[in-house]
Length: 349
Image 1 (cartoon, one colour):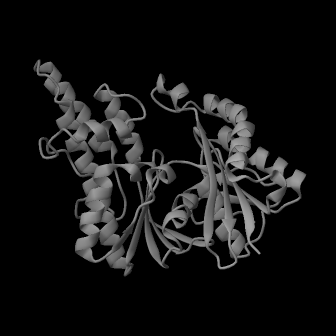
Image 2 (cartoon, rainbow, N blue to C red):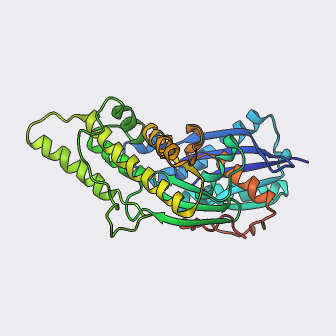
Image 3 (tube, rainbow, N blue to C red):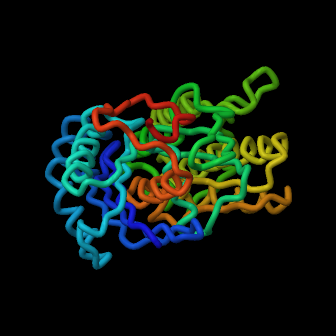
């Protein structure tokens, strides 16, 4: 008998509620994915303000839940289990989602699972492409995280192979966008500008690619600084800033490092499938270069559609479904949100 899993996501500036159906064969079907974003409230600050995000989650949680159930044609009483992001993320934002999930689980008398936001970004791919091959390599690229992960079991066994030592790729996009006078968040406007630019116009550095650097780690702080200095120098000379060329050259540097390290890690691990997930996975150059390099290496590439790449409740519901199918323990009702939850902890118990 199939089961309905509700997922709640509130780790940053999106309030997400997703509903999936877990079938008897272990496959997961997406029924609803509703998101309320507070990004416009943060835009004038050039980044997410935790207090603003928390208040927005409080205001959006019930309306977003209502829309999700209306979209799926379900009632709250149809829910068989609830999964909620327990971390990582902003403490206050996480607390709103966790509190809501506890209330719903108590009222409905259904099992509650506190799950990992990062693992959710990987699990969401199963809603589009079906079960994950195991093992697979996940390249997680978002505003707050850039990681290479080995996934042996999406419900229980994820190992970090490498991570960023400073700025995440998404953070670098936001900061470079600000330097170029482009709107926040920086990913989409830089991607758009880059389409009209020359990616070889400026030789920006490729961080953490030297022989003595950790081969699976990333660094984008130096690249961000290099872009800022180049723009500042051109401005001092009285030159017009070629925004499209700067955007394209910066984006090429990011995509080059991400894809090179992902393909190399997959080869070294003997893994034949790479999943790219997280908000930056929606970037057109990253997906194109990854496809090119994976094809050359004989590696299967899986990238969820853009809507599934960004933070959403569907990814938490999908991960919850896999955790339920694996018969993992439920979370104690008194569990706390963990802003620094490590990726190897897929679900709390």
